[in-house]
Amino acid sequence: MVTRAVLALGSNLGDRRATLQGAVDTLLTGEPSPVAVSPVYETAPVGGPEQGPYLNAVLVVDTGEGPRELLRRAQAAERAFARQRKVRWGPRTLDVDVIAFGGERSDDPELILPHPRAHLRAFVLRPWLDADPGAVLPGRGPVADLLAAVEAADTAGEQELRRRDDLALRLPEGA
Ligand SMILES: Nc1ncnc2c1ncn2[C@@H]1O[C@H](COP(=O)(O)OP(=O)(O)OP(=O)(O)O)[C@@H](O)[C@H]1O
Ligand SMILES: Nc1nc2c(c(=O)[nH]1)N=C(CO)CN2
Image (cartoon, rainbow, N blue to C red; front, side, top):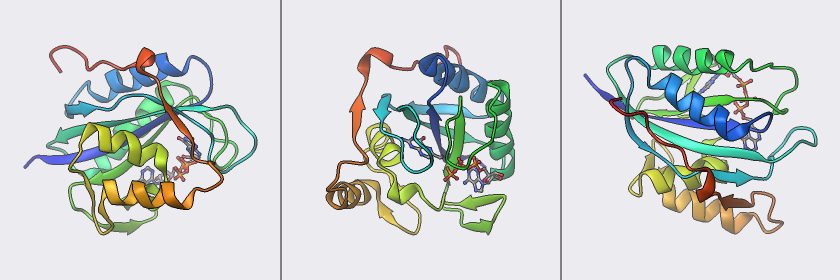
């Protein structure tokens, strides 16, 4: 059985674009096969201490494995880019979150599905909508509606994002 899953990638330390491209390449070495990669957005940091802007993107995959295997692959990619986890919501070379795994719901703290904060984050919703205009966040609704709600609520412009077509990611050939 193949399941469609959505991964959110973020980086705000080091060579951010090279890290995101490396993460895409790493994640697609093995079982998951690519469906779409979103444009890259430069985004203001949301939450946490004062820190530099992020590059964020979304990767949509099909996988014959289960959600825990996908989380393991996400964490292996983070480790490959020497992510150090020091401060909650603090700067990181690479963060990979599992946003959705088919319609699966889980409240296991090791893997909460869908991701519990995805519906509040323009840096997830905007690129996901670009990658899949019909996207639906299980239990929450169409991503287009969720993004409109986030944008309407963000009167202070804290979730500002800027599309960076000059930093576009590519899917590896033959993946
Ligand atoms: N859907 C999910 N995707 C990724 N990690 C998850 C998910 N649900 C639970 N986790 C758990 O969360 C922990 C990772 O937290 P992490 O430090 O990456 O949080 P964060 O990226 O700083 O914050 P946020 O979760 O708000 O994006 C891991 O131990 C992982 O097991
Ligand atoms: N703009 C932006 N802000 C964040 C991000 C992120 O990827 N992009 N990730 C966080 C924790 O996962 C916290 N804040």
